[in-house]
Image (cartoon, rainbow over all chains, first blue to last red; front, top):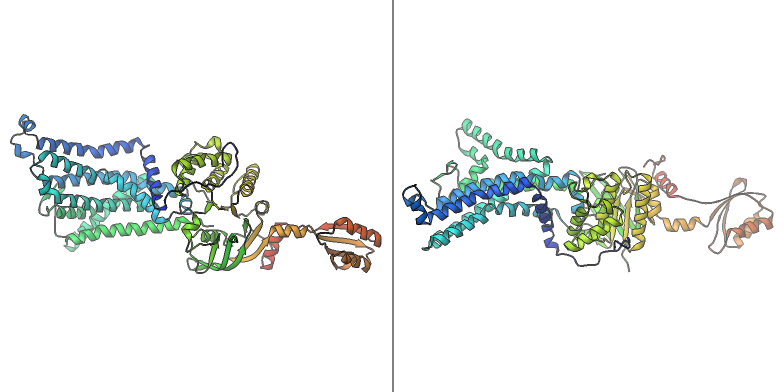
Length: 295
Length: 313
């Protein structure tokens, strides 16, 4: 199909492996995202706390700087399990905000003008499509959660020496697991919303509502029934419970208030996994309905 | 031996508990197949089933030898699909949109970019390729859809109402393009349209659907060839010897009232020989018609045979 000949000719070249094609969606989505100045600013802002945390770690491990500060005794700067729990809480909230901006446009843009049949009339399944979009959020939210947190962990290990890394290595597991469940839940939830709501501002609102309305309903339920099981509808609280258990901090006071541990941790896992599954069912139903042209 | 383009075997498809396609059976061997039928006949359902979007309740559909249900992915790797409705990503430039689709079909990025440019120039949108698809006119969007359907070099091009909403010059250009694509390669074509003329100008075979059933499968090439040798005569003074002499030449004749005679001529007999026989027999030929069964006649016939006399489409 050479341009100068203006004649049609079939393609006879090589093809990319089928398993890798979902990543085309990811690449194009990232290219579109980075065209937005607001997104870039939001991404930078969500990484600013990491710089502050890194600075804190630097001071905590530098006796000279500590002596120069008018803050008093050196023991004030402690980098321990609790410190990493706080980092996790801050960064997962940053991930939530980033997700609220990015998630709503990922599928809505394809659905608005009926592009879905074009994707799915190729050797490309609904699962590939969802995987491609999920990878966008997965990579992005990883970039503000476990990746920088592990870098901070590495920084602390490097600066503290004295075998700090070996006594705290177990923290890598909760950092990875807790980040993974939070990223998965946020991603699936926002993709499900994106498949239903076309306008970004409305979709962002719906994501917020999905978090806050059930929390309110749960608290109402608790107040009326005199129980604490309504907290199961507070997804953020359930995540903090999992986080606290992961870091062995169930009795500690977190950055966002005391961690109440009346709810068993497996129930908290159950809630987050249920949100993931429900989002997946909603997403599948919506995409299935839009894959074929009716007429 | 080459596989038929489409093979339907007792294909039954149900949607929402309602049977849309009722036991379709037929084989379509031509390279360019037209799909006709009134609204609600099941054309889009058939296309969606061939693409593997709907699962057959009973029976099967094979496209280029591949089962649409069990070999869906392999089949879709051979297909280029131009849907009837709007289907694009409005914020993307035309060429980026086509490149994106080509990459999803498996072309490496560099080749996809090259093919996207070529496809855009080929369909005549070369100048508009860097504009967002959302700003295109209706006709341009149709061409962009065609470009994305051909960029990855499919073996079967499925066009669902390709000329919808196009003005006559744009429609003519698109039909020419479709014919050009067909002739320039070994690509197969499945064209669904409400416009009989579109199908007549591009297809060799038609499948006519009505109420989810096959009303007719007609090979237009054979039909056209047969029509060239079919004469309707209005004569005065025709004696039985006239038809006997024609039959002696190998023609088949049927005599009706008021001197009307229908003649089917073998390939070797030319029309002037009919005139010669008439002159020698002293028969006046007052009127002579080639039978010209257009696709419209075929379509209306199919509709009448299945009980729709007004031929609404």
